[in-house]
Length: 131
Image (cartoon, rainbow, N blue to C red; front, side, top):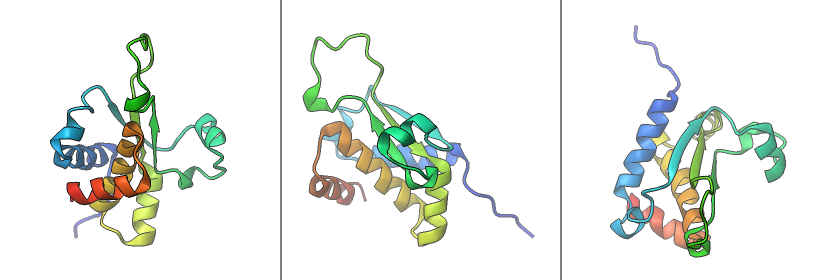
């Protein structure tokens, strides 16, 4: 009998990178420096800063300065990052029944949207383009 295991960080990252590869070229061209990290949960400082009491509430996070706010004077800054949180993603996947690929894509595209300073409507259109 085959055993079923929750997807590991490498699987989540592979799904996220596949989504990035499907984004329109105009967006991909501006993501070259962004770092993608898959972690179990957001750390306590991040949760407190974001106002979350439950670590399962945060599935992804963009950290950095949106493209439109960047300056040539920005030097020595940490790289822009998209964080995906594996355990909350798995929990939401189990609770909603949404395909894992679709859920990871949705969260990733939302965080990419923050990188570009997009509105929720723009993020939805980008998600449609990457489907």
